[in-house]
Amino acid sequence: MQQVDFNRIQRVLIIKLRHHGDVLLISPLPTFIKQRYPHIRVDALVYADTRPLIEHHPDLDSIHVIDRTWKHLGIIGQIRAETQLLSQLKQGQYDLIVHLTEHWRGALLCRLLRPSISVVASYPRRRAFGWWEKSFSHHVPVPARLRHTVEKHLDTLRVLGLHPDPSERKLVLGISTPARKKIDAWLGQFVGEKPSFILVHPTSRWLFKSWNLLRMAELLDSLIQSGHRIVLSAAPDPAEMHMLDQIMAQMQHKDVLSLAGQLNLDELAALMERARLFIGMDSAPMHMAAALNIPTVCLFGPSGDLEWGPWMPEERRRIITADPLQYPCRPCGLAGCGDSGIADCLQAIEVAQVHKAVEELLCPALH
Image (cartoon, rainbow, N blue to C red; front, side, top):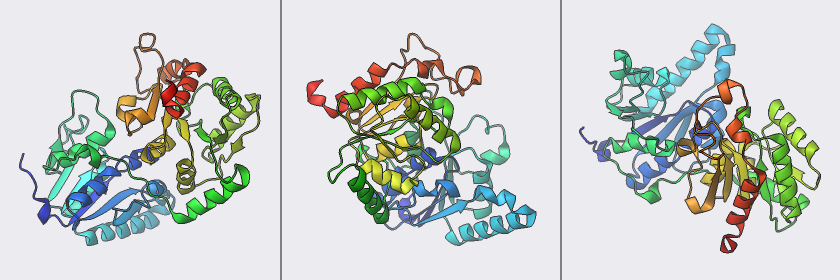
């Protein structure tokens, strides 16, 4: 396949229409492109609610958004919003479009915006559609083995002849100064001038990725008994808040600071930045902790850690899973066993496994 001369590329659009954590995983691409070719303008197109994950990215020039609430505006209102977005994108005059999902909108935009180069992964479910195939100039082959999502994103540049060094594959999560000031003031009031705490985010947008409530409560109690200060966080979603309430109700030690439902994503990042260690599930906050290089302990059940694990140095993370001999079926990608909402492989993880991983990361010299 013919390589691309990036010296002739002026404007790049990266499209990622997925959830929060997925969007953060595109963050190495703008930085990698800018480090090699500073003259290139790099823009992104994401859903409006996921924008905070890249809003303060230092190497993104502009962020275009699709608001999922447009569908409530009525036919005329939605057409008006879509037309305005298309007008903005046409003004970008993009030479290269990198489409990172199998969303049909990406193919349509490539036809409407007519970039000289457009690249997408070769999704099996789209191969049969000639219209899809012909919408892009370059297709990235699907690897035979599981590959981390960040590497698969970078493959869209590799196929064009741009190969990143290991140092050019890091996640990037910018944090605003107001968020840092707010969190510092909060921690100074509740934790002390020199806060030393473990941040625990026990929930996930997808509740089937969350651990057993009783075991999470037991873990928090054991960490407190070991002398660790605990700060809890969760999204303001009612289901997640209810789950956190259930966990706290089962705890014997109530000396925790809960900021659940009180932080936006920018403020959550600022809070993470001050933590000694992060404990969480397969979720956007886990990816945020990885981007900030905070020592991270994460629990994985039916979702695949090889594709979605925290993208950070191995010595800074511990991925906890059930015994693969006992649960050879994981990762299955289902919403719990048989799509029941409860994953046996995740619930089988023992408290001692997680506590040991925490101590290994905090006191590596002793392990």
